[in-house]
Length: 229
Image (cartoon, rainbow, N blue to C red):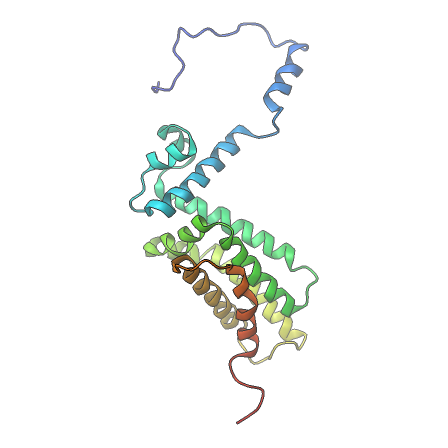
C-alpha cells in the first residue's frame, strides 16, 4: 500500500446504493461534465509543456511537472511511465490535433488555397502557445532518438497531407506536373519549421502566422521575375 492510500481507520459509508440514491450520486459525480481521469492527464501534459519550455527537457524534473499540475509526483507516474513518455505524449497529442484539423480544413478547397490554409494553421498553432513552440522547435530536437521515432510516424502523415494537395493540384493542372510532390511538401514544411524556430529565438515580438502567405508565395512562384533574361 502506498503512502497515499486511505488509512484503514477512515470511516466508510455502508449504506446500500438504492434506486433512490443512485441517480443522485451519479448526478453529483457527473455534474461538471468533465471526466476526472482525462482532465488530470491533460493538466499534467499542459504542465509538462510549461516545465520543459522553461527549464529545458533534460534539466526538468517530474517533480517540477507535478508541482505546476497541482498533483503529487507519484500521480504523474499513474499516467506516464517516465519524463520521456511525457515528451512523446506532448508530441503525439499536438500532431494528432494538427492532422485532424488539417484534413477537416482542406475539404473542398482549391489546391492553392489548401496550401495557404495548411501554412496558416501550422504557424497559428505554434504562435498561439510559445511554450509549446519552444518544446517543438527546441527541446524535441535535442536527441535523435525522438526525432527518428517522430519522423517515421506523425511527421510522415503530416507531410502526406501536403503531398496530396500538391498531387491534386498537378492532376488539375494548377501546379507543374514535373515537380516531385514529396519534395515540395518537405520544402514547405521545412520553411514553416524554420520560421517557427526563428520566431522562438527572436527577441522581437511579432505575429508568427503573418509569415504563412509569403512562404507559400515563395513555394509557388520562387524568386525569379516573370520576365525571362
